Image 1 (cartoon, rainbow, N blue to C red):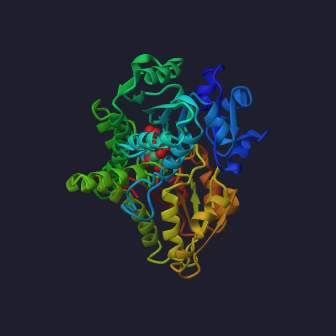
Image 2 (cartoon, rainbow, N blue to C red; image 1 turned 120 degrees about the vertical axis):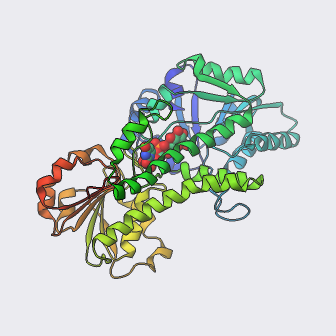
Image 3 (cartoon, rainbow, N blue to C red; image 1 turned 180 degrees about the vertical axis):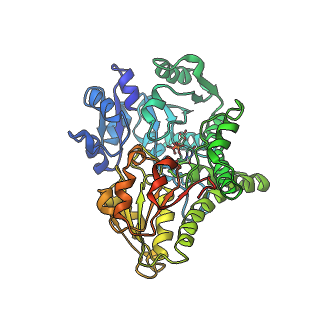
Length: 449
Ligand code: UGA
C-alpha cells in the first residue's frame, strides 16, 4: 500500500486496523519504531506519510470514503474445529467483509490480497450480497477481485517495485481495469496477468508450494551429500545451470520458515483431501515432513556431537529470524531447534541483529514446553557475540545475516571452551577461515565435516 501511495501522489491510501498499538507504531515519528523491519520501507513511509498515506483505527471512515478496498488480513491455520491444523482460518476475512458491507457507500471494488484458499472471493461476495439486503436504504454496489501478493519479506520493496508478475482475478471488466490502471503506473502491462478469480487464488497457494518444495528438495539432498562425499554447492551449481531448473531457491538451510509456506502447504493438503485427492495431499504433505525432519536432524546431530547430552553445554545461536533482512520469527527453524537443544539440557545464548528478546521469549517460554526441559536447559539473549561466546561449547548459525559472514572467528573461538564446535546450517562460512583454528566444524551439505 505504501508503494502504491509512492507512485500515485493523487490517490489517498489509508490503512485501517483495529489494533491501536500497531497503528500508533505506524504513525510513530521515529521511523525505526515501525512495526515491521524491511529494507527501504522507512524511506517510502517517510516520503508519503500524512501526505497521501495514512494509518488509522477509524475503520468506519476508511471504508466509507474508499472507492477500492484491499483486504490484507491474516489467514492463519485453524487451531480448532473442522480442518484444524490444516485449513486456513478465514474469520478475519469474513469480519472484514461484514464491515465493508456495513460501512461502504456507492460502488466499491474489493480486492482480496490475503492468501486465501480457493473460493474465498465467493464467500466475500456472498457476505456482501446478504448484508446488502439489510442495508438496502443506502445505494451499495460491489465488485470482488483477487490480486494475491507475491512479495517476499526482506526484499518486499524491491519485489513490489519490480515484480515478476501481478495477478488480477475477476469477472467484471470495469473493476479489473480500475485495478490494472493502478498497477500500470509502474509495472509493464505484459506483467499484469488477468485470470479468473479461482485461478488467481489457487496460483498464489501453488507458487508458495512449489517454492517450498524446492527448499525441501535441496535440503533432503544436503543429508545425502554429507554421507556420500558430494558437495551441495557443486550439486546446486550443476543442476541450477540447467535453465529448466534455474539457480534460485536452492540454498540449503535448516528448513524453511515464515508465516506463509507452512500455512499454504497445509491448506493445499486440506483442499486436496476435501476433494478426495488423498494421493495429491500425501505428495504435498511430504514437503512439510522433510522440513520438519531437517530441523530435527540438525538438533540431533548437535546432541550426538556432544555424546548424547547437552547438560552444562553452552550453545550460541546466531540468528533467530526465519531468514535474513527481516525481524520476523514466525515458524523460524530456530524455534524448533532451540527448543530441542534446551530440552536436551543446553544453555542457549541467542543473538539476532533485528529480533528482540521479547519476541523470542514468547516462543521459548511456552508453558507446555517447560515440562520437557531436563537437566537445567535454559536460554538468554545476548546482543554482543563476543561476550555471548565466552566459555561457549558451540556456535550454531541458523540465519544467514550478512554480518555473520564477516565474523572474526579467531577471536571468537579463543573465547570458547574446548572441544569447540561450529555448526553452520546455512553454509555461509568459508571453510578456509576456520582451517587453522583447531576446532570441530560441521557445515550443511558437505562430507568434509
Ligand atoms: C514467500 C514467497 O517467496 C513469496 O513469493 C510470497 O509472497 C510470500 O511467501 C507470501 O506468501 O507472503 P517469504 O516467506 O517472505 O516469501 O520468504 P522466502 O524468501 O520465500 O523464504 C521462505 C523460507 O525459505 C525462509 O526460511 C528461507 O530461509 C527459506 N529458503 C529460501 C531456503 O531455505 N532456501 C532457499 O533457497 C530459499
